Amino acid sequence: QVQLQESGPGLVKPSETLSLTCSVSGYSISSGYYWGWIRLPPGKGLDWIGNIFHSGSIYYNPSLRSRVTISADTSKNQLYLKVTSLTAADTAVYYCARLTSRLGNAFDIWGQGTVVTVSS
Amino acid sequence: QSALTQPASVSGSPGQSITISCTETRSDVGGYNFVSWYQQHPGKAPKLMIYDVSDRPSGISNRFSGSKSGNTASLTISGLQADDEADYYCSSYTGYSVVFGGGTKLTVL
Image 1: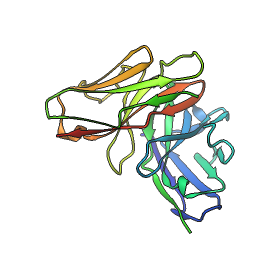
Image 2: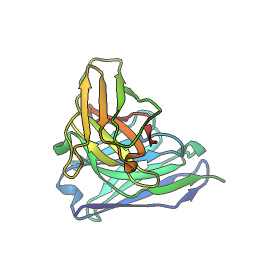
Image 3: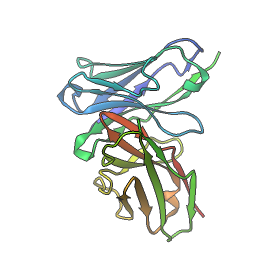
């Protein structure tokens, strides 16, 4: 059974950098699939951040590309998200999810999410 | 990049059917075929309900159905139940990018 678990600091200060980890169990991320980061700001809708392919290709939301870095460590079976120059607008629940072409390039498995608050 | 427009809210009574629309606007001509729908209850992760416009993942009730006409995709929920009350998001995958609609809050009266 494939499971994803996000982890991170919870509270970060404006202008600082956010670093999140997504630990994947039950499947080796180097074996296939795309893996994505999505966030849900309070009172707003889902916001796609970017995807990393098992081959290493990475695609970002154009609106966030200048501040976001997605990476992976296949030896640890983990995905990472970095967001720089944080503002209050980056406050959100951050999710990692698996995207599968088998189901029309949809996100079929999601982590439980980790809450990130940007505040001084 | 395309944009997906959904109504902010819809409502229905138990047993009734409701439909949520998702209209795609884009500056270039391209595919709008990888359409999916997600259900999200408060405090929970989104759940995939429909993929490829109208297909249901294993385990999803046949009360949920999807369709598309032109640039508008739709999610229909029949036989409304109290547990269907949630936020619903449409999404499209095009050119390695993902776009989500703004979300629709479904209230079961």
